[in-house]
Length: 267
Picture 1: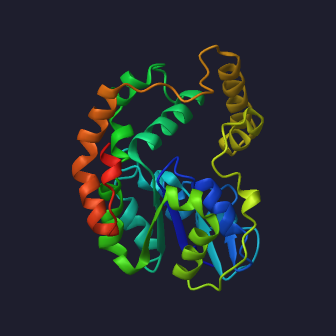
Picture 2 (picture 1 turned 120 degrees about the horizontal axis):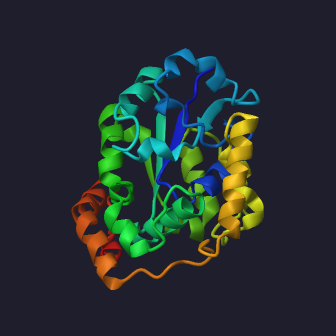
């Protein structure tokens, strides 16, 4: 077997809900966990059997949804060429969201999991370059387009998926040359507020029992912390302007690549 498609991000742009929708198709097997982050491993070439074991059933197509594949340059700087080495015919799916909305969601995600220690979103977004970089969608996707070809890269938008999940998933099925499928969109948990009972997708799926236990302890500590973020934090107008200024050139690029008016992202 060989993995045929990757949903590479962007992080906090409904990739979990989209992957759940894709996994409903009878011709698709999605990985368990959704984000194995396999190609960021230095030894990935030696671990292909382990990777393929994450796909639990026989299917026409196999896919996974590691959003760290679109967080250049924070992780593997050779990620695109490594994926190409594995499968030169790989299909790439990338869903984008208003940069400020995505940054806020990403910050909450990072803070509540202990990856971010600054409890002021306005300071964190200005001091953590990765927040800006992961929102530079053209910077992230252009290397994939250059390597795999534009016909093998599908660009989607968060707003479209939220408004009509069936239409968006059928776009993906068409892109993957699969028959259209009647989606059960009620099971996707689209656009829901954070639910503590999910325990961070089973503790973010660490591999070992010890790692799982440590992750659970960390999560429970965060829950007992009065600073735990359960509501969208307030972002200042100055910070919004800072983010847009740093993403403006990239937004203009992605407008051309996607052939879509994104002027509302500038405000």
